[in-house]
Amino acid sequence: MAIISSDPLVNSSDISVLIDDKEPVAVTGMRYMHGVNSARSIEFSVNTIDDSLKCRIGAKVSVLVGRVPPNVRTMTNTTNHYGYGYTNYYHFQGIIRQVSPTPNGATINAYDYISLLTTSEIVNYKDEDVLGKDLYTLIADAANIEQINTTNLVGGIGITATKDMGLTGLQTRKTFIDLCIDNSKSIATDSSKYFDSINPIYWQYAIRTDNVFDLYKLDPDNIHNQSVLEVSLNSNNAYELRPSVNTQRLVNSLTVENAAIKFHFTYNDNSSISQYGVSSNLVSTRETKREKIETSAFEIVSRFSKPTINYELDISNDNMYCLGEYVKVTSNIIGEQKLPIQKIVTDFDRGITTLTLGEKELSSQELIKLIK
Image 1 (cartoon, rainbow, N blue to C red):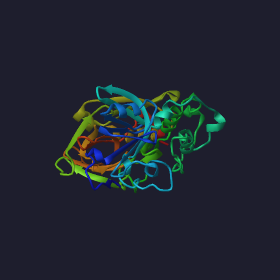
Image 2 (cartoon, one colour):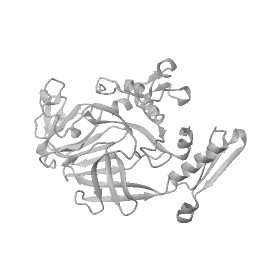
Image 3 (cartoon, rainbow, N blue to C red):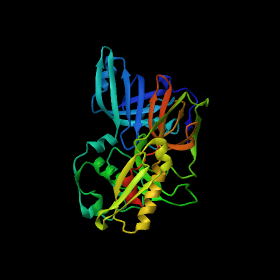
């Protein structure tokens, strides 16, 4: 659920920043940026030479949002975590990666510890260490470095690593994690949870607070999803709602081919074609049963025959939400939708958070591979 603070976070006195767990600095103009499967970044300014000298490249940055001063009890791993229950999605740990000097200070850019997975030493992932293991376990092991808290990573995706996933070899930890994520997609068909025949389920990861690595499932078509926020084009709980409609993934004419048996089948959605024009695609399959191929073509076109709609939503940063939570959007374009949060940008000076809403649509080729 969203956590609602009692004071506007636009006030810089609500933000405490500590360098290397010991040097407090006074900051202005702080901005958070966070997308799925990537490091969260922060940008802030310091307005004295002394503070700018503390913010060296490679230094640790700890950020606590709320009226709790940074000290050993609030910023480090002790038995007393006073302050961590308040505005916790804004808590941040990371590393300074860029310093841009100004006449009176500097502008600082820092990234959370997923950035260390990106630049990690090259690891040789061998068949005997990877194959047959659940992808969840492999991701948790790859993310388990000293700076990242992985203690909550207990569970499973239900998909085990196979040779044809291409997971083994020399690569960074993040490259390996991303390959596991790419192979963690599945299809759900439970009629008690979904309206459509094809319903992709996929996994994402992020450090959503402090240094805690989260691996979470997105099931965007599930009718039982609970929303943390409800908005519409004229609602008073949002500054602005900006829809974006595109046809990049629209497919209303699909040909499925099995070259081995010299068979192909084309399904057209004539209603969609007359409304949006022809948008065709060719996919390959190993399926040999004609009935299965024809059904798959129909189900895929049924899913892709309409444009994709995403939203950007501006709200007050008094209310905090995290990646993967669902927002219910009502518009005159498509009616009601529950869409996951895929990107968050928070500007503390303006007091505004921008949420990017939308699901990760799989391609026709990805779907045809997943259909059993």
